[in-house]
Length: 322
View 1 (spheres, rainbow, N blue to C red):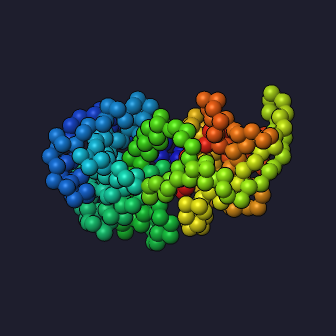
View 2: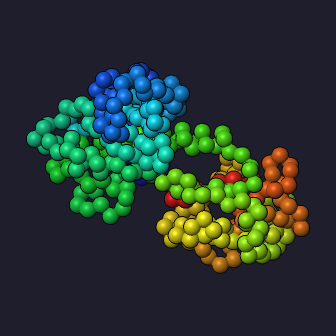
View 3: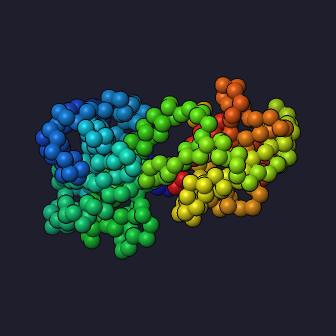
């Protein structure tokens, strides 16, 4: 429902948004500097609008008008959202390292001051710091229980929702762009890299994985082309994650294995921790699995209770945790 609401809200903003990449104004640069603790001039921010704001992204979230990159590699986005009385223009900064929001500032609005006098105060704007790309923010009225929840300003729920939806557009646009850029650079290097919303958690080489407790599992995989028999050898996926940091198994809820071809599957951590179910395999019938280029040394995530193999991930190179 949140996705549908965002799409409807995005479309309703069309009168206010232009989506064209232009250079930052002094006021916009000052807002990013305040958030990031810098002193850069507008011209020092690299304009990425033309590169990131494709037609598809402008059509989906036309509120995002500008995207720029600071000399330190942090991202700045200018977004216009619909409040109670009219458009609200905001500056949103995202860390290039953690890929989380650093903060948000209100640049311009037409809201009734009496009801929204607090929306420019730091106690409210800082509620938008530390938010993860790809996870939509939700407005709550009394208490934020989850990290993605924003407490509404008393008497200004509609305004808060408009601001939140604007920030969500920024999270969507930048999150999608960074994900696609990462996919372009994926390579089978003989190791699996693990990422969390905070950034890289580390990597484990195939050599190290081969030293972990190994098992053999025989299964048949059915598909539209027929049934194939396999005798896999590998280790539990949970062993691979624990080799980096055992805390990963309890701190995160979802596991996304990603192949060099960009294919990813969604697994719950509960599935990964269940007995005899989710494995990282590196051999089949006594032979090393192949990489995408046909050379030996490939890795595959295998879910034993998926006899159709639809949630298998071939040519594994990366695991994303949320």
